[in-house]
Length: 212
Image 1 (cartoon, rainbow, N blue to C red):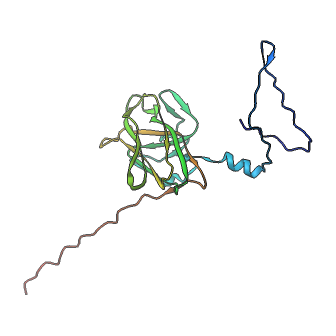
Image 2 (image 1 turned 30 degrees about the horizontal axis):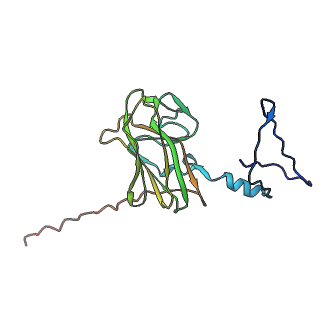
Image 3 (image 1 turned 90 degrees about the vertical axis):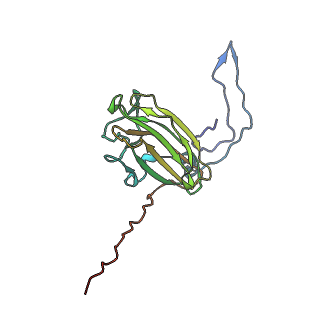
């Protein structure tokens, strides 16, 4: 365990065990080291995790409604299988959210499921796609009322991570929550990316032959 404390001029530090078992103090310490850490270094070490809800959610594409940070697609508190969550992304199938990692991320973690606002309705599958849209992870088929399914995925070396929610051809009641979704970075920050759109091809028919 790392202990942080305010630096003060001193000649020595005293370590004292405060708990006892049968009147005997039990305590051990190994590889004790004291280093000077600036406030900036401490802040940097603690800022490795980034909630996806803080990214630019205008880049989320979905089949109905608008994406919401820390709320369901209907703007209600996030709730999956009776469990409330204070942070996350509320979206609607079919949805797609591209996040640029630049190969500097460690992991992605979240609890996913259908929001309780639809009752027992709705059926979705959550997917995480890596570079070249390779499927890195997918949930089981989740329905309204099901308990949230957890994911903790190693994304080391991944440049682009896509959060995808699939409900097939019928998207009704596909109120999908990425609850407590966090990306842990080694360096840098994750950024929302635009989804590549295919350019529309206009087929112009050849002019008809006219009789002179």
